[in-house]
Image 1 (cartoon, rainbow over the protein chains, first blue to last red):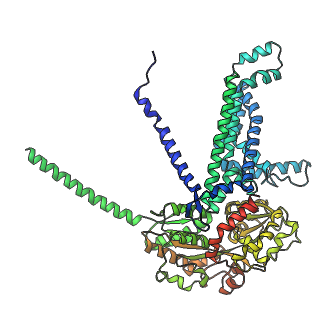
Image 2: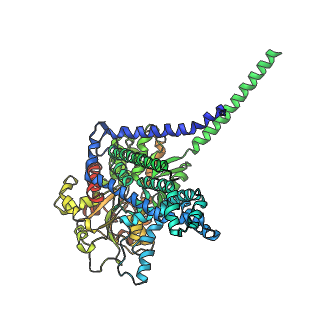
Image 3: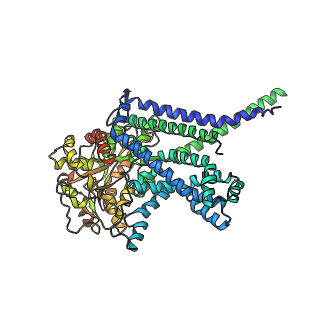
Length: 285
Length: 355
């Protein structure tokens, strides 16, 4: 016999409905700007036009999208490479001290604001910052490396910004893997590296995929980090939207960029979701 | 019995309602007396200066407190537009050409100059429009760190920014490129802001020298303070602020002139405290306040009656006479600047920032 939920359970969905309506209303408001004419020198918008979408073909704006996709991909991959060992040690280590250290160094920065963290990267990556200072003191370089206002600097800061989220997602995935599988593989003669490669990694694939997708989509909408560490020389979609909307007063084209970016994120999430379901069907987890 | 009880309860209810109305009326009267004058202004030292030197005097003279609603130039403009039907503030401090955007979008009240006695003595160019008046001036000009730029590099002209030896050193504002666009147009034979396209080719040649773009006063100060962009097109007030923080900065007025900026004040359309707003503006334009503007804030006064410390008057970009405004400052027509800013920003974004 199927147990029926109490009727008041239906009310629990209200906050979600409220959020969905608020989101739909704001997106509709944004969408109507995309079809209005920009009037230079004015905050008002003009009549109906499709011309704003034609500007999306300009190489300048396409390049911002390509740069954003590349930066997001590099950030997601960097997060995976750095986050997996940390998450694995966080879950599997028998040393409480090591686990606490990892927890503090990776998770605690999440509780500081993104502006604070980004400003600290200005100090670390600067011409006279920590990295250049250390390399110069060690006699490795004579002239400072250009790290600030470069894609490399922005990627480093973005990776550090999102690493805690990746570690949490991966740690949750790894903690769900029954250690008996790893022990069985080891008892059959597999080396620790072979166990990791053939057992643990495949079984944690859902976490790897969801972590990578989350970081990729999150980074695609990054604003403060590229704004400050990029110094106007490295621009992502949000920075361009800000420039167009809030400095140029070109709300219509800013709306177009926002809508296209949103559609792009939905498309990426959809295809990545398809990939994940296929992996689950072949029984990786 | 029941009838008398009914009458009694009605009488009690009426009495309670009257008492409530009396108390409510008293309270609302008191709240009205304490209802603050709301001012839209930038944050940081700008807000602090106005609060300390104008707001306090205003409150002392009127008994009305002042509330400051802070934000960036464009953010505040957008907020004013969104709350047009029910304005959040009574007065708006903003830059002269942005003030024209407020005016063209019907966000300002037309000023009754007869209520602004101190406006009669201002420099004529400080009366920007029938809607907003200047409160202080500054320049955007060349600033550099002498300890981080080769000693033999001298800055006497805007053209010196194009020196190949300055490769990867210059910081420019990304929120308003009008200064460098105008300077480039001048160097390319342009005469007015409308000739700005003449300077496009030259401006593209500046790209190798541009290290970064700054998006606010704070990031400008951070970039020149850390030495990341040892040369900047910089707001004079920010340069003087950094000097007080111990940063070595030289400020230069090029032979072609420095680009003058004027910050202004106007009354929000629909403000219900217009008399108080006029009072506040009058205090801002008072020669005594203008003296503080110059001597404390190192900004140019808009009143020739300000008693400027001779040492301060000598500072580059500190224009204290009508002749200096004419000879050393490049004043871009404010209305024309507001109309062209969108095109300038678009071109600048597409050709210098995004490319």
